[in-house]
Every structure is written in structure tokens, then in C-alpha cells.
Image 1 (tube, helix red, strand yellow):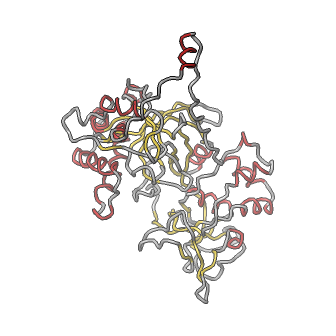
Image 2: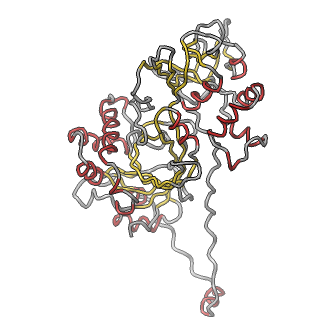
Image 3: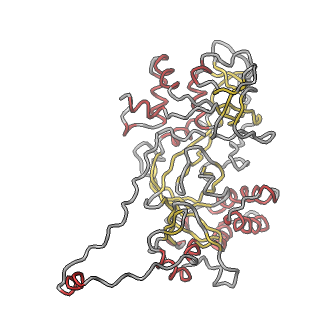
Length: 461
């Protein structure tokens, strides 16, 4: 039965197949009840379908670098366990994951056999996707490294700004924390009135001049633009020091992907659109044209300095350094940070037209405003130009297997649902048709949703 029964539910409960699921739920469990543990807790994500899998169903599972995946998971576990009780996630996944994390921390670093055995003993693989869709969707991100200076000069004239003092987010962040990347933002005027904050055009034309908000200066507005898209960056200063900056706030204006603008204007064909294509066009087009397209995106991101370092990776939304090729950004409204996902598919890793097999255990440690849905992820590829090239050409489907902590059961949601009412007796005419061998057509099921179209650069961080 494993690999064949797909369970589907929406926020109001399971849709088609509820009766079948209620009858079969006990035969498709995560193993908790069979081992004498407490009854399984329902695993629910809105508008999500699950499919039970075995470890043998995961291509390349036996060949993956399990110690590397375990080390990334362990870093998440330390963050999960050190949070105060008042700060803990109330979702069932968090409680179950916390138990697995406690075991992981007690076990410590593992060799290949130990790491693999840990995952297989503490988790159950479930294929997960949006209701009505077969596959998930991947994009990539990275940390740009650009040259810059602490002081303005003809070579480095473009400022990188910290959060302005007159910026008022709808939800005030805790001291030392970044503002949310969603929600309304206002500007408090000298008279105390709240108005919309300056858009990108106003800021690029000098609206913030004289407020002493400059963190550093870079060569080109495109350098700032791409760091804003990725959400973090490293500025290589003139003395060789690397200045690390991270997202801190935004100006409240909607994000418009410039890739969409270039497609709509016929500048870059849709089938050729990628981050690389955007970068190449910006490097060769007239400055006025580039500014016009760039300013079509009115959103603007402000940064904070997070340190001076060379090798430490960017810090994700979970508050820990990311791991290149192991960390992913997920929908934080659906998934708990620290959740493992086994992702497999063919991706353009080796080149634009390559189909490189990608079979890897990843850990959800970050998020992004365009990362929406149960099987949607942004892979962190590290820092620098090569990481940027790989991330820039990735916009591909892939299969997601969520590793659900033991004790969570997606079928448990069906237990309390009522069975459907008995069917009424068939009408005589229908009975006659059946006896005569004529086919009777059932009402059609709803059509599967098409995959949502995503802009090439539609993951502002």
C-alpha cells in the first residue's frame, strides 16, 4: 500500500476520499501506535496532500552524505531546544521535532551509519505537495560578494542604507531583531503624521541623503539590487575585510520582479529568463533603461551589519548560519524550522541545459516572502559568483519528501470525520442501463490546479 494511497486535506478537513482514509488510517501509521507509544498526533498542513513512502522509495538515499545532513540538522536542533517555553511553536510538528532534537543533541556528531540510522529511526518519509499538484518547485539563492568602500568615491558612489529612523513597521520588531519582510510600513513626518514610505525611485534619487544611514558604498546600483533580492551580502572593503550585511527592514511597497518587466517589454524571452539573463542585461544596457526597469520594482530593502568575517555563512531566519547545499528556505507559516526534507529531481547544476541528478537531504532553516506552499523551497548555494550562477538558473520542479517525526500521522486527521451518508438506491432507469451493459459516468472530480507561474527573480528575501 505504501506509495499508492495519497491522502488529501484542506483547512476544513479532508476532501475526496475521507471515508476511505478513515477506514485505512490505522494501517498507514508512522509506527508510534505499533510500538506502544501514545496515539499519533494529527499532521496537518492547509491545502496539502501526502503520500506514504519508504526509505527505498527515495532515489539516492543510501548514497547521500548523511553526516553532513545530520550536522546541519543538529545546528537547527540547538536553536529549537534553546528557545524559551513562551517562544515555542505551538504546532504539533514542533513538539515532535523537539523530541527528535533532544535525542540528536544527546547523540552528538555521527558517522555515516549512525546518521542514517538516526534519521530512519526518528522520521517517516512522506511525499508532500500542494493539493492537486504532483511536484514541488525549487529556486535558489546565494550571498553576493561585491567590492565596496566605507567612504564614497568616484569608484564607489552608491550607498547601502541601514534602516531609517523614521520608518514605522506595522508590527514593531523586538530590540535587535529585523522587521518583518511583509506588512504595511509608514513614514513618520516632522508633524507626527504617518504617510507611505519613500519608494525605490525616491530613495535612489536622494530622498535619504543627509540622514547618515550609509553603511558602505558600492560601484553600481545593480550591486545593491541583487543583494536586496538575496537578503544578505558580503562587501569586500578596500583593505580586504569582508563586511557582512543582512536584511533589516523594507519600505512597504510591493515587490515587482524585474524579470517580469523584461518579459513584458519583449527584452528577454520568457523561456530564456533567469537571474543570469537579468544580470547580463543590466551590465550591457544603457544606464537610463536599467534605472527605469529597476525602479519598476518600488520595493526597497534596508540592511544591518552582522559582523566582519570571511568563512561564516549567512544567517537564516532560524537565527543560525546556513549550510551551503543543505539549507533551504521554506514557508514558515506551514513548516517548522529544523524540519528535514529529502528533495530529488534533475536540476541545471552543471550548466544552463544540464539535467544533473539532485538527491539530497535538506533542512528548513530560512524563509522568504515568495516561498509559499508546502512543496516550495529556495536552496542556499553559498556565497560568490559560482553560487550565484547556479542559483540564478534554478527554477525547476522537484519531488519533496518531508521527514515527519515519529508520532505524527497525516491519516489521524481522518479519524474524527463522519462517514458520508449512504447512497440512495439507484433509479430504475439506471438499473436497467447497468443490466444492459451500458456505462454510467460518475460526476467528474475537480481538475488539478496548474502549477503557479513564478517570476525568475520572484523571491525577494
